[in-house]
Image (tube, rainbow, N blue to C red; front, side, top):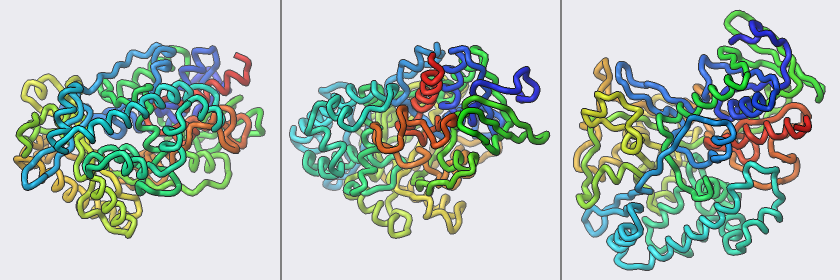
Length: 523
C-alpha cells in the first residue's frame, strides 16, 4: 500500500526495509498500539528470507538465499502468534572421505550408538567420539546460558562471562583462536574439519586468525535455540516472512512495497523519511526510524560516513534433482547423507589450503562446500507430482570464496567455481550429479548459483556479506548502546543483521529495536 494513499502522513515508527527483522519490529510495535509504516524497495517483503520458484515451469518453491533456522527465538514466534513451524533433521552431518583407497565417511546422527559406531569405523577407536562428546557438551552448556540473553539488554563482557560460568569454555570460545581448541582436542583431520566448518560459514578466516572473527562465527552457529540445532523451516524460508508480514498487517502496520527510502532527516526527536516510487518521490514523518538495512546503507540514508564493508565469501547454489545420487560409500543411504549437512572437501587441511589459495587471490583448487536436502525433511516445498516422482532439492553453500575473486569477471569466475565445486562432490558419488539434475520447461538444468557480487546486486548486501558486517560478540562494547541497535541519531535505530547480535535468520535485531523504542516510550 503506497504511503501517500493511507490515512497517515506521519507514524510513530517508519521501518526502512521489509526483511524479516523489519517485519518483526513492525509486528511488535503495531501490537503495542503504535502506528507503523514499512517501506520496502522491492515488490515483495522478506529480503533474503524468501521462497521463490527459480526454475521456469517447475513447481518447486525453494529458500533462495537463507535456508535454515537456528537463531530464531521461540519467544518471538510465541509473542507474535506466528503460524510457523520448523522440523528437526534426524541426521546432523555426513562427511565423505577416501581412506586407504576405499570410500568411507563420518555420519553424525541417528542416535548415539550409530554415531559412536561411525566414529569407530572412520578412526578405528573411541578417542575421537569421546572428545566430540566432551566438546559439544561444553558448547551445549554455553548455548543454554547465552541464547536467552540475545533478547535482553546487552550484558557487559564480565556479566556474560559470569553467566557462562565456565572458564575453560570462555577461553576456548572468547579468548583463543578456535583452531587451538580443535587441534588440542581432536586428532583426526576429517573430524577437525567438521568441527571447524561452523567457524567459517560466510566468514573468510583461518582457524588461527588473531582477530577471532572465526570464533564469533562459531559461537553464533552453536548457540541457536540453546542447543545449536539447525532446523528446516516448514514450507521454506518464505513461510516465516509470510507469517511475519501477516502478523504485522493484522496488528495494523502498513507494508508499502515498491517504496525505496532515499533519505532520513532527523533532529534526534523527530524525523522525516523521503522515499521514491515508480510515480515519483514522497515523504513521511516519524517519531522513530528503524533501518532494516546494512550499516553502509544506514550511513547513506542519514548522510554519515559509511563504514568499510565486510567482504562476503560464499557461493550459494540451488538445485532440483530427479533423484538423489548414489554414493561411493555404499554403507550410507543417500537419504540419510543428504538429510543433514553433507560436507565436501572440508577436512582440516583442505580448509586451510583453500583459505591460503583464496587469500593469495586464486580460486581454491578443491573448493569446500556443504549441502543439504530440504525436501527430505519437508517435502511441502515441492508440488505433489514432483514428490510422487521422487524429486529432491539440494542446497549448496560454498566456503572460502571472497568477493575479490569475482571482480575480474563475475560470470566467468562463477561458472569456473561452480564446475570445480561440483567436481569435488562428484568425487564421492557413484554417478555424476549432472545425470540427476532435473530440467526446467525450457530444457535447462535446474541449477542456479549466486556469488557475493550477485548478492550485493540482488539484495544490496555490501561486499555480498550475508551478515551485513563481521559478526559481533554478544556483549556490550564502547558505543553499542543498551540494546545494540542504537546509532548516533537518538531516534534512528539499526534493526538489521548489522546490529549487535545480528546475523542469520533470527529476528533478534528487530525484536531488540522494537524493545528499545517501547522502553523509551514507557511501554
